[in-house]
Image (cartoon, rainbow, N blue to C red; front, side):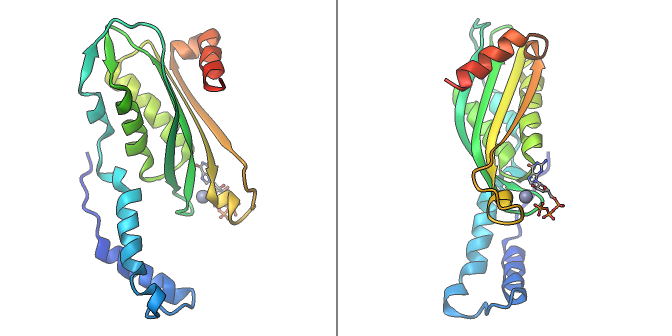
Length: 190
Ligand SMILES: Nc1nc2c(ncn2[C@@H]2O[C@H](COP(=O)(O)OP(=O)(O)OP(=O)(O)O)[C@@H](O)[C@H]2O)c(=O)[nH]1
Ligand SMILES: [Zn+2]
């Protein structure tokens, strides 16, 4: 796993250069602490770069539940890797455990967070969460649905405030069985 220390001084000097480049004065009162603040913010919003989300699957409960578990409406935010502005929305994660391999519900939200807090694409987050659960838990099936608004589409460019992007990743039995897929979709929309 990549272990990297974030170089906050480098971020701060880059932000100072950006402020100069856009034609503002980085030495004016209101901007004096901005490079440092942005560096602190980047440390937070890109914290997932130094995280290994698989650790959240280390504690497995031996619970013979072979029906669906759905954690829905998990708020998440990420940074679009094309423009470095946020996209914000909700994740819904369903899986059907096998051989009693059940994890704590909060761990599902932690996995979403660790994978989101990096320069990302919505499709990659969706797929990464599904693949990680398949690899670590070997469940009967996994289905992940993300819906988000991308600031790069809202505040600039095409300027479509409120447009939502929905992505899904479907693995195992959810892939082969449209009835279980529809059950998840119905529960998400409840
Ligand atoms: N597939 C995908 N596209 C994304 C995501 N986040 C942002 N984008 C898109 O990335 C694309 C980048 O397009 P480019 O033409 O290289 O950049 P641009 O000139 O800034 O594009 P516009 O946003 O259309 O102004 C845009 O269409 C964004 O909407 C994402 O998570 N998934
Ligand atoms: Zn973007």
